[in-house]
Length: 390
Image (cartoon, rainbow, N blue to C red):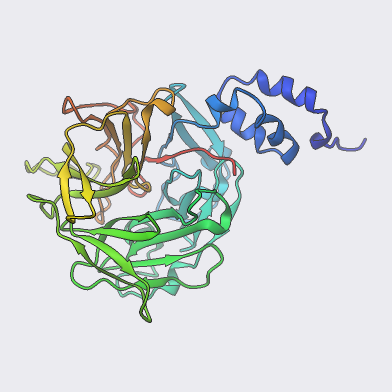
């Protein structure tokens, strides 16, 4: 008996099936089966509800062990995503991400870094995986080849997936991945298929806390809050000074760059400085977010202005690529809020993930974004990713 060719199902039948799907991840993955099925889903009114989906929260892997033994249990290959709109957890079989440190993005792609010291871009819905240069192409005495678990845990301080097309078309050759990596947090970049990482020089405080592509330029904010712009005109790209840090900024803060309504903004994340005694080693890190400032950049004066309100916007920050959008365009999204996850750079093996929530910018309050016992990890805390089957 021959295997049926599901792509040859009549469009009318595919349409009837698609209309009966109730959950966003089912609808998106249904359209990812083949081009004819996707063509049908793009003609449905339901796609306006599902294809412009609220970001999912990717939870830590249950297979975060310090060795690279093969896992025989199928559950060890599952990755779990919390879908706020549906208030449910979706299990997706992703052997490609088993045991990997993962960073999210608003484009539907994850950056993964595994025990084999290999980087990849991975679409969790289609399971398409794009190769990036291995860690070994960036030489640094900080790395320990005898301890790949440590490398996976702490050699990358921050990772960014950036779309380089001006029309925001999500295709494979439009991605640029930037890392802050190594003992001194150097900035490097590569495209899928490149063989080596290219270094962006950064005199002074070179550890970029966040990087964004804005109006065709690449901007970074360093650990003191200074705004940098990347100059590609010389023999090597270099981050040069562009604007001073916001007034009152301190080096212990977290800094994030986002575009809102066509303007460049910075989010300052303030932590509780109260010292906490260290319980046993299973305790997570000692810092806890208590307050956020949001500032808009004026390119004429090169000054930062504190915003009193976010209006209809929502912002997502953490280990994922920072992003923001109009909350009214997304079901279940809270306007005027900052959705944040833990992105503390931990190099001592303590647990991460507890510093997470929804900050109401106007009321100065924090509420839980997800409540569960499965948010703590030594390697890959929860990250935001917007599902996309491209």
